[in-house]
Length: 250
Ligand SMILES: N[C@@H](CCC(=O)N[C@@H](CS)C(=O)NCC(=O)O)C(=O)O
Image (cartoon, rainbow, N blue to C red; front, side, top):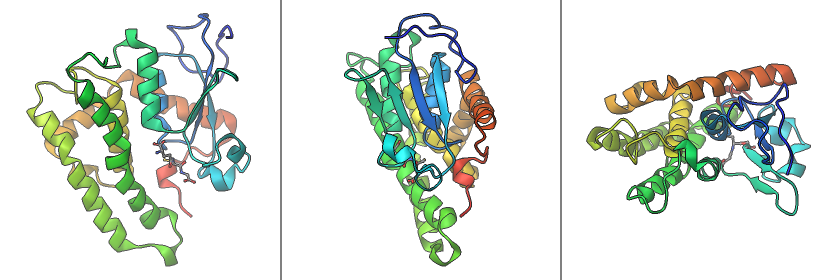
């Protein structure tokens, strides 16, 4: 365990400064899926160290493969062996951070009637929503011209928008402005990132009206805005391009 003090590259950290908890280290590319845990950290106002990487790290920061053999972001590390926490799944990080800081109210307890829905949204955020988006990104943007696949882009854009009907339905028929439990939770952060990515892909104009209003509301959150500002500030300080990962050209 270490005593945490604020340092220049650290996050907001108002609430937990000087408490004895291991520092959280987040490896991140601007507006990549690692934005999910960054947004959570800012919502929770935890101290953290943000390690910015050029996108894709697999090609542009080869040393990172020693840290995460997948070469992907996010990588979240907390503490040291033998009690080190190392995570590489963004939705799981949202759940972990919410569950380990229950007083902040972003978690849904297993005893809550909405627990099943909460887990379902967390998993859906990446497995069902972001998965088709990655095919749109790859075959519409990241691949060189000769390997671009307009049919894949069209098919998986449609697939994503069809899957997004689950969000539209929940927001339309639910009694509140959030996905589950009647309040803002880690599930909204996880699904909210899929909406941010959709915006980068030029798909946000096709959101249904409830999803559109929900997305506008999420972007107004101080935690979201702090996370946006923190990633640009850290990229500039660390000499990493501020271009959002989804907008990267080959
Ligand atoms: N399921 C993982 C996926 C992580 C992932 O694929 N991240 C992308 C950025 S959004 C990445 O690092 N891509 C670089 C690469 O595949 O080389 C998660 O949700 O965190």
